Amino acid sequence: MADHPALTGLAACHPADALVQRWLAALAHERRASVHTVDAYGRVTRQFLTFLGQHWGRPVGPDDLATVSLTDLRAFLAARRGDGAATASIAQAGSALKSWYRWLARAAGIRNPAVAALRPPRTPRRLPRPLAPADAEAVAAAADQPEAEPWVGARDTAVLLLLYGCGLRISEALGLTRSQAPLPAMVTVLGKRRKERRVPVLPVVAAAVDAYLALCPYPLAADGPLFIGVRGKPLGPRAVQAAMQRARIALALPDSATPHALRHSFATHLLARGADLRAIQELLGHASLSSTQIYTDVDAARLLDVYRHAHPRA
Picture 1 (tube, helix red, strand yellow):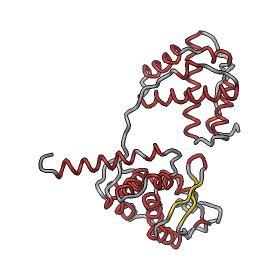
Picture 2 (cartoon, helix red, strand yellow):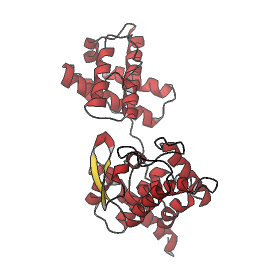
Picture 3 (cartoon, rainbow, N blue to C red):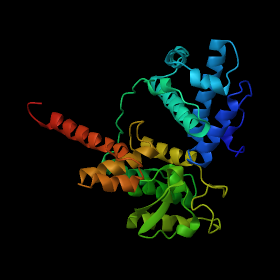
Picture 4 (tube, rainbow, N blue to C red):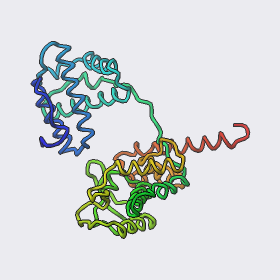
């Protein structure tokens, strides 16, 4: 467990540090949280222990965690704001502390009712910014690199089509293996917390993957990655982001046109064509319907925009 990137480097300055290590290990290996989540939550708890140690003038032990007051918790969040942290970061810090204390109550018998009363600041809900259907369809073709070998352009086209045509995250598209191609009508992808789901594959997406494989100069191991870089190593997210940037420039799209915006476009365009919200939830791999419901706001915002521009009295 100690080889997880986010579990290293925790300074042994407080006796309570061991509880942080155990919690991060549980996040990483039991709940299968992402490296980024474990790293962010670990950073918050380390900052919290350091703040308490300075606030109280002594090291923080396990028993002290049960005596932390609501004033202490609010003072920590206020100190974060004083250091220039954004509202979203402060809200994340509050969520991390609540999550840690839930684990402390369950795994270590350390309970603190003050934490339940903590109310982190609410962050404004930002709506996804999908591309127009015509722009989303044009992105894959515009991502080509004229100076690169043909197989590289075919690869980038295939990856971007997977993001829009199947609603995949970058990590899900790059997690496909060679043994999964030619892509069937339904393909299994590995999503967040290593949860599998099956998504339908459009013929145009399958054809793009076939075209890439026909041109790829490297032998691909069956259990290896489907998409590789120019040196034959697994393709990384930066290459996909660069392909999207080329398409964005070529099509004069706004900065909000990112690879993840293709996933947003997938969901928004399905909803606009009458798709069921529960079905979209399954296709996107959202654990909660509330995560998917944001797309109803997107569609409503689009309709309102059309109304304002089209109605003579708007």
